[in-house]
Length: 340
Ligand code: DTR
Image (cartoon, rainbow, N blue to C red; front, side):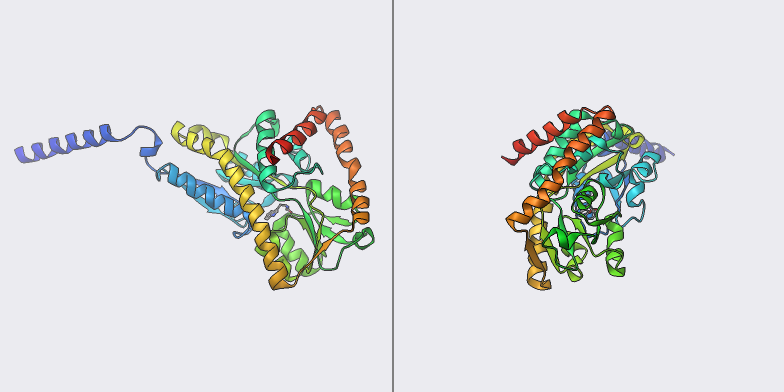
């Protein structure tokens, strides 16, 4: 009996010591498991950035947080991402704002033809814009980071070198980019990127308008043998977390995620810019893709058709009560600032 009492006492003291020695906060507690939903296939850039974020969070929280990732729309699809996260179907979700036009007015203004030169600059501009305006459209979620694509170009099965070539051509795009295709006279077909490989294969569309990393990641170079360089608009993305889940996270975990937000935006921008180069090298060298540069005369005509788009957006957004001119001016000055 005495031995058992001594043993139990010893065990009690040992447990107390473990408790006292353990650091406070979640970094020492049981693992917190979070689900992260994404809509496109795993090799695409939104999923690559998701895996990088997961790795960094798991590392920086010393294993206290575990993230289970769900690429390819296995947990939530492209258009249900925001509402699915708000409803708690996933703890975290990655969304392309262009897929819900009219919902993210302020941040979607980055997809106006305002000359954002690349994904790094785009991502930094978007993050600053979000910080400044704290838009109502994100009030129900915690925003973990934002980033953009590189500027969009035309990938097509037939050669597009003039406005005559693009007239009536069935091309896929979403959101702000869709208006641009319309302005050039294409027959714009809206759908998320995740639906595009099948649409191209079945001949529903003859090409698409997007950033060029998909030529390799989604093997579009196998069907689209022409790329027309327009370098027009970027697409903005956001990574959001369910607000209750966020509020329940220990402060030290929240700090890790907050500190990662801007870094992740820039990392993703840089990854995208590098990856576009690699994708186009593969497309031209191994897939025989032809890159079409518009003649100066033709380019002037294409640009002129885009000129009214921003003015129209300002008018509509202003009527809806947004400080539209200021938003556009901010995007332009932030672009200058981050391009240096
Ligand atoms: N350009 C947008 C967004 C986008 C660009 N690359 C990818 C890859 C996977 C998903 C979305 C995107 C678009 O065309 O949908």
